[in-house]
Length: 521
Image 1: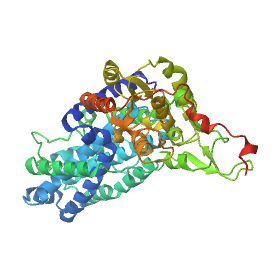
Image 2: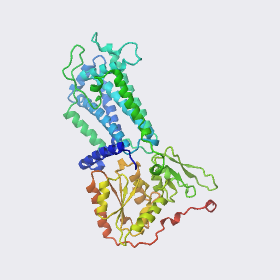
Image 3: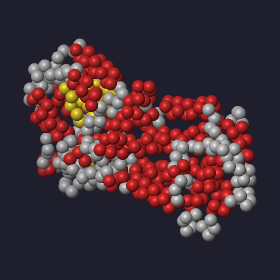
């Protein structure tokens, strides 16, 4: 996969974070693999804790009511802290999720809607956080309110300057807090709309982390809320200048910068940054050629089995009526929705669908013409690695004598390719995929396992000895796990009799194109 220098830099950062987390938690529990679902989990936590806090919030005495909540040692104090910490974690998770998609070149083409709607959701979340801090009406909330009024007063929207509310001529009107409360409650409806748009083009979207990880994260936040309560500054006082102001730099990191420039400069920077972020899909788009070619269907080979539409993670394939006299339907790919993941190629038994150069037939031709001639009389174990696999993992496998065969995604790998390796004399084939929650093709490891061991179309044929086939995970920071899986598999294959090569293997003879007139009933 070709990446721009900026994408490569982002990928190195993400790989470093993944590796550090994998060493601590293991790849299966790595939260960085699923920051999108963590953000959704935090929204649920915010909803639950926000409903509780709303019961005790008083518009007529905002600072006093929040102080009473924070002083409650049994429930209110830690619930308020949990609400605050979940806000911070939502922002972190959403930002890291966007960075990962950018690093993996998943921010353009059919994924553009997901990118833009994700930015919209993050913006709505920041607005909600802003109003939430103002509602507390401590010194930090007042600081945010005053800066917000200064920025809004430059816009020709209000008949009277909003800054007069905080001039000290009188108490801040209750209507101001009502408007903040209204925005804080109503704007989250936009989060629901943004989330729906975000996954609207995705088949079988996964919205939450694995149950164990979700409960562990919520539990850790609860413990942190009890042990380290979130800070609450003194009640805002227009007649007193506070010596210090507690600040949340995760949500309001921009505040110290904005206060030092004119509103026009602030709006200019915000507008430029927002425009740049929204245009990322345009900046990162690629020509739909080479590895980015959309899938196509050979109607002569399509049997109308409906498997590729079921497996496609993006709903890019539908079954339509044929324009010949055969009785079945035929698959059709919408190039505007296809992300070139190639998973459909692995799901097609007759090998008639997939991106150009990646169909099952293309895979067999590549193996026969380029790889099998390099096999020695005693071929090595074949390690099929996803193109996203760390270079250190690939090098370590080669150093141990494995013959490494790279594929764009393990979900693209056709079962006949594994069969050809085994029937050509390889002691075994071990396939290394990405962590299931970090697959560029979204569902590659899932469908691979189903096809290899659970008879999902296009399944690995019964004539292939399953003891000679294994599936493992290659995750940054888990080189030891990669090598342990290889050594265990190599030990297992040693106990088996070495398979005899069958000479000129023709796995795809059964799937030769059938002329229309011969295929008609």
